[in-house]
Length: 518
Image (tube, rainbow, N blue to C red; front, side):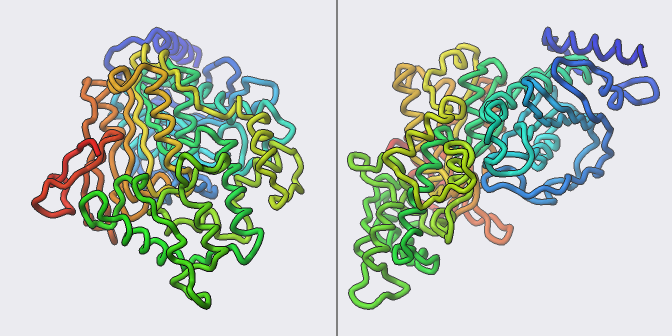
């Protein structure tokens, strides 16, 4: 064991200096190198388990999924290759209890590392996303961000745990994971990537802003990077829709609103295809649906009209200071905000456990004039990832891909376009940013996935090509499926470009479109 431990420690040192050599074969006395990883002694780290998992032998611990998170069911774990599964607890502060897992392919390692993000207030390992990375040959890692279970209750009275959730856990995990990669293979990863959506998107931007040398390439999907304001907006909308039952819009009316929006705006882009490629050009007013007489499923009462106006993205010149608004075309997903009878739990949890530290706080008492500022003051400096100065990341050679669905009903889509534009302004314009930062807006897609538009695409391959071969993504092919069968493909275009029909051929085939400025 002493000899094996000496070998491991030597490999750690090799990993730190970043030797770019081919990984050596995994050989140890008795074939127990994986199990011997538990003998490593690392700062503020306890390795709790190191076991070889046979091909097809992984079953994730039972844990509820999180909206916006990467776990998507047991099918994600089918046919996994054999890997070394290392579990560890990190304690960078006296109140930290960060659980991480690092998975190391036994054979077929691609010499790269991919860390994956979380959803909501996290509280669990993102096993499905790790499985996807492992299947592609990556060494991979995930963290519960320092607490167990969803929701914000972990943060009350625990400022260090809030810091862990805000940014520290992902960085500490990354440093530890790279060390373990070096110990296992004899050299560290040649390229390192981060891939996350929703909270994972915010984590991605935190990494680019706070720890620019951690990753060569970063994917940030639907980044909730101004969380206090976003969750304040959730409560504000819920208050408008749910506090007075007369203002609530029944879900049965969503299709009628959606149809009216498409009837008014679908053809603006020159093609009637059931999608709005740039919803900001649609100025549909829900007042046209106001009932002329009695309330009916296909019309809105005056109170419901006012609710719809508050939900829909307002004119930027007169928009709410609290809620940026959802884009027109997102109506089928409004239930996540106004489905009632109570608001989204994360929005309420922010105020209960972080802002007021009162589990009995009532969302009906929310005061937009004062409580948004309270939320920002309570933890905006910890949680927000809104710094547009990405010079250190760009100087390091990092590449940043961001994306978001135009029909997202969890995080208003203009959050992503606004951040992109702020980075361009700070960094000197398009010419100074396009070589390392691109945003792809996805027509018809909901939060991280799903929706009526082409919503399945491979951002990671595009990022690999950019980082490893210098080939910037000019478009990314996306598909839509019904009952498991692909029925539409389209190009996703670097914002502000949009996909335009060439005028011939099927509107459901990608080759008949090109990316152009609107």
